[in-house]
Image (tube, rainbow, N blue to C red):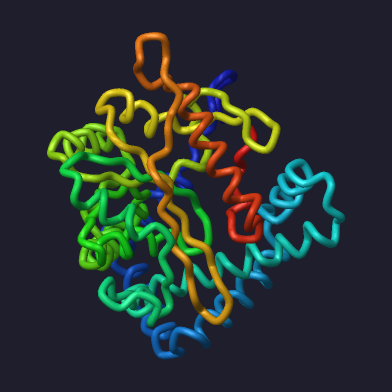
Length: 313
């Protein structure tokens, strides 16, 4: 019997956690995932995308994230009818399913040739901005959001000779994480796992005159509160902090999913972030500016953003 005031030990839970985190478990799970990837690849891009979207819509009917998304959409778009918001939600699940299977075909999807623009699946708005960033000899920051297939951005930048050091969230499975790192770094620039040392690695890249990219639309518990769809959110201040320290150009980039398996990649001109009385980037106001750009993107294509995330806490 447990003593009063002391928590009962949960040996089974601890044992389960230890087993699932073991090297053997990681290898076994990775083996299954690799088999699933091979199965998806055998379907081909178009069929796999349709299947992925259909499966995600089906799964979405049974998970709590759907309730959260409905709540988020109702607060963000009170002027829309329930039917309109439900249509957006179905698009969210469909797009997420497509994005997941598109990882397998990323090398084929991004078939852009900078010398023959307009011939492949990808159209680009802001080619002059890509080239200017590549050739100006300055470090630069590119912020983006979880819109459409956001992984396409870094691949397109690399095709224009602009490799980007990108922050990403590594899977807890070490074997799968290594697979993803190898696959991604062959197509884009260097990847930096989002952990405690990530800021130093990103800063070192800017010191070397390189370009860094990051997704900045999700909850950041230690970030400043800024408005997003009329409600306060804790936002990631890293873009504004780095811009304040390095005083380098800041651009926004997004992917838009188009019909018939096509995409549009857009790179904005430099975004002017507000400055304080000393002429330095104001971190809080700069973060609010970044989030206002993201909000504009989401309002244009709400079905292409991850409303499933608990953004307002």
